[in-house]
Amino acid sequence: MTIIKKKYQTALNDLIIYLKNSKFLNDKNIESAFRNIPRHEFVTESELDNAYDNEPLSIMKNQTISQPGVVARMTEWLDVKNGQKILEIGAGSGWQSAILSYLVGTGTVYSIERHPELVKFAQENLKKLEITNVNVILGDGTLGYPNAAPYDRIIITAACNEIPLPLFDQLSENGLILAPVGDSSQSLVLLKKTSKGIVEIKNQPKYVFVPLVGKYGKK
Ligand code: SAM
Image 1 (cartoon, rainbow, N blue to C red):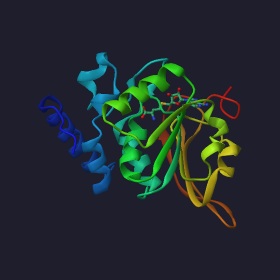
Image 2: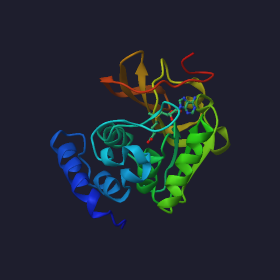
Image 3: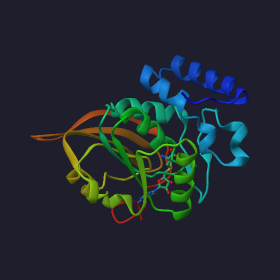
Image 4: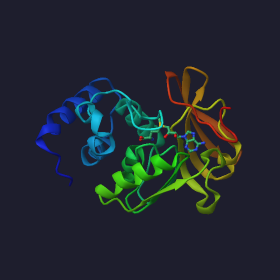
């Protein structure tokens, strides 16, 4: 169990109470992941005092660590199980990867990031917590990461106009893929790959993410 400094403990408890009351956090395992993967280890020094605000925060290269409520909801929708292999597009700070790594346990997380500075930032943050089952890889995540495919779950943490096609090929049968899809405001879309094709499981509007750029991303 991670020991969180007293300074942050109250703020984390308040955040968790808020997320539970507002129904963004409904799952005991995800609550445990939030308690064991302290967000203040994934923000820049200038944002330390805001680490447990329910807000996205600036990291580097004009990118953000996502809002805790959104991370909780996306993680819940992804329905992660011990031992699974997960592909994340957009490592950013590494916080979402770390939450997923906690939930997959003996499984593995691959996270693709296009900015070298953020690959380094995420890797350093994960190392501080001695997390060894996340591989942060520099690249264009719209191409996926065929080397380790197929994946049980794929999560895109940046806004796309449509889910990049290569990702469907890299998803296992019965696998889930989750992404914010749209222009200035996006819908969170959860799809399942079945033997008969792709089926929409959930769709919820009014989210705002930084853009997914790249070969099959926004121009
Ligand atoms: N999951 C992150 C976290 O927990 O801190 C937040 C991710 S941030 C909202 C979106 C990230 O997607 C940014 O770091 C951005 O650089 C990255 N990104 C955008 N387009 C990408 C692409 N084609 N390939 C890989 N990463 C991309």
